[in-house]
Length: 250
Ligand SMILES: [Zn+2]
Image (tube, rainbow, N blue to C red; front, top):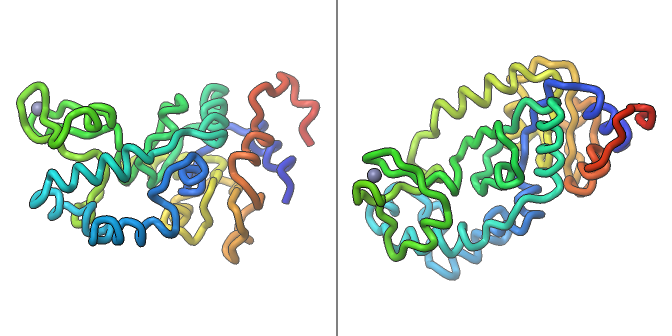
């Protein structure tokens, strides 16, 4: 279906919630979600990303953990793209209620988005487990080999969810609540069968739009499907300088 239809949906509705998938992060220059990334990490460190980014590895070998955290996540985090900026414009215009993502690279907040539910944590929210002070990625990069809390001297805990840990229940509840309040659900850069896309089960609204690089069988459920580069599609569907009148919309 056409980008024009998506544009009509996004410019004529409020109460929109976005499920933001990994395609945006990859397009933004982030390495972590690339298909061949796991192999690269295994070759380089002799361990899988799952082993390294686990709570037991962090506890047992914090220096090695933080080295990898800096090199593989913080230095290769990439940045926001047009998906994030379009979402920011939608939020500024009072159309977007919020974003739910599994991504922890914090691109949406870097673009200025305010209501972002990060189910797997945030690379800029590394926290002191003792006093609760929060440190951004820059602080972790600058404090080698181990980053300690300036306040109380405790080793800072990484902001991303580690394997072997329970996910933050509060975030999951926030995500489900936000999706349940949506009138329009925009699934961006992922399909409905992905882990993130499966959250569509909480959606009770009336319009479901999917923007992804390829169509999946389950996407027939969507009212609007756009196939292609998510950033390019969002730049057209919610452009920077859209006219105040809606005459141009189809
Ligand atoms: Zn502290």
